[in-house]
Length: 455
Image (cartoon, rainbow, N blue to C red):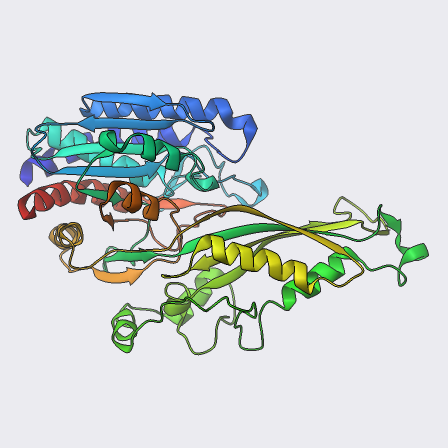
């Protein structure tokens, strides 16, 4: 609608500066020293929702970081959309790999470089500005609720309790999430599913103290060496995961589904060049898009032990550690896989070390039905602003709360992300295209329009 475009064009510089203000707050949920930053960010989200036209906005404390809830109710009998997002971000380390300061947003070649620019501040803020657009042009015909949390990056440990205790408050007809990616503005896509997650930490202990590697080396097992061997054994020569029972519940994709996914454009050379690698790696018998969308994976996220400081120290360490995560596909259960991982690591440990494996967090995989009203509305909205019907794809990431929302509220979720897989999520130099930010603000009002018309 022309009124939307005119309003957004007139205010686009302010929209961007407001996003920058959010990005300057180091709202890192994983680090206790950022507790005040988390509260400050929640307060700013509340302020911006009220300014955008929300009737009421409240900050709900949890045993961790607060949740911001806001709503604009025009008529209780009208359809209601619940927008979910998160204001917390990943740690920025390693800082030396950033080209610009991670919490000082900088535009380079049309891209906003900052931690949280795409995941998820830039994307949830599109919805705040879409609300403002609808309110200021007097064209909002449905109710909109917001649930913006501060713990998504650490597994949303307190959101479940909040949702269970506030079902009436969160009551809606669908959940709309922009915490995912599309192929590009030229080739739009919509995620129709996300993988689940099981995340564990392993501690391997050898001798009761660090030892002189000359005096004891060759006689005492080195925990780092043992851990490395254990991890190496988790994949076979075909990069198939070797843990017994790991694939038992995997929902295999049909030939038709694989054919549909193959329609998504993929340039292998461009993919490798972007990552600076010579060869791809993965489970034999599957394409790259299948490996990152419909197949479960097991990854080593971190490993450490011994002396890692400057210079040399000839030590045989007492302990070694690793963080290991599994991405899960439909029918797999995060608690079952976590139990398999923990028991397997304990089982394969040789007698010269002891192993302690613990769970960090997890979440369930999720699939969006293509015949749902919410998906149809999202598809039509994207087609309206980008001129092409979006391709349905499976996302490789995880949003732990998806299955929770459906279980507690009994409603479906639709993903409408405007990030790109190349936006360096969770990595140094995270970025978000300015054009994608503005296109998201342009598209979201159409979702509300079409969803309301179809209901």
